Image (cartoon, rainbow, N blue to C red; front, top):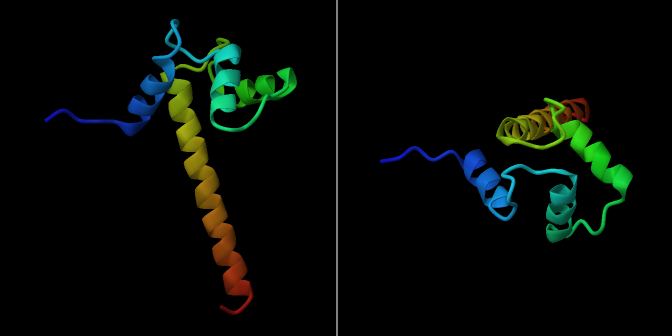
Length: 92
């Protein structure tokens, strides 16, 4: 039985549509449009790249993508903690 990593699978399914195997600014714009985010401005695409492209090579590779999933988990954890603090302070 082969071990399956969902992050790898998602990344590979995104990259299979692009010949270079990474997500560059042009590819990111296409992905975001296909996800229903509309047409992003050049500045919006650059800001997204700056957040996700952790090794600063101009493309989102697998390790950058893994970092994005970890960042999302961290944000979710902080939101859960905030909600817990708010509920506790409201006497719930």
